[in-house]
Length: 234
Image (tube, rainbow, N blue to C red; front, side, top):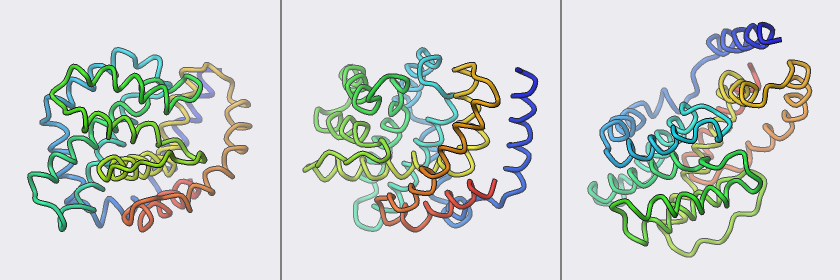
């Protein structure tokens, strides 16, 4: 059975390589790269990644998922705010988006995982050099990132901004990554059969298509549907 799953994974990744890269990464390459550089150089982000690695077996998918979500959340933050805020403030917001992205699924396998992950993140971040306002904004964003649930109203502008960027970056993963990475990470963790994978996959297709109309930021609405289309193409 393990051999069948590995072969299916290879086929999915091969097909994925044949699909054109999402427009977001072609048209917003500069912002994505700026986000990646800040992500890689931040001591705070590194400490948060260490916390996630310590719990990696309990988040249901690999560290690659949270890295991608965090970097894309940072890129969206650059795009949405660089023309309306001072650069020093933009860089701080990008850092907060990175932290939210890294920690957003830290309790992924538990019921109501967004809320529980937000609570866990709040406890962990209390020991870092973040203000109470920043921690509240991050945890508010994490608590609001789950699909097909009514988002909690967030009165604070920073919390709303982080919530929308985190949601969109996470839902970008419902494109090609859903079929080439995330699906197989969950299979590895749950140790299910290939037949079970295919059955759940087919049932999940409707939900993937519904994601198209849920993106929140201007950037997400512009590029999110393209991610979904390319995922479905695979």
